[in-house]
Length: 119
Image: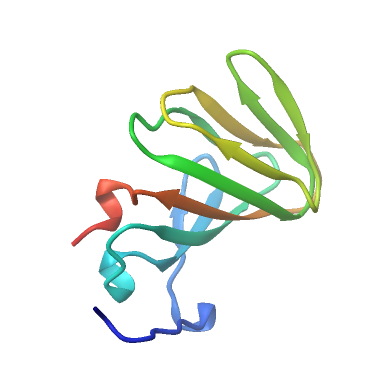
């Protein structure tokens, strides 16, 4: 078993993506040797979104800490604001849209972690 690991986000380079958003991976096999879970922070910039996608076998949890937006699935739309936590089971289409004038920030957790998070 690996020992305790801590990460300071100030030392992690964010991954900029289009539409405009930045993600910092803080826990994963690549970052700290985690075998089962990945965790990070996402900032979806004004006018940006996390495009429509799905995870076939990963559970995802998102906890929103700043801004406003919408979590959109095939069946419903959830208005997002600080304090909202979304559990998204495997297999469902979803996207996240920033509907505000500031960054939409959230913590994300995957279990198991995505293949891109592994070494």
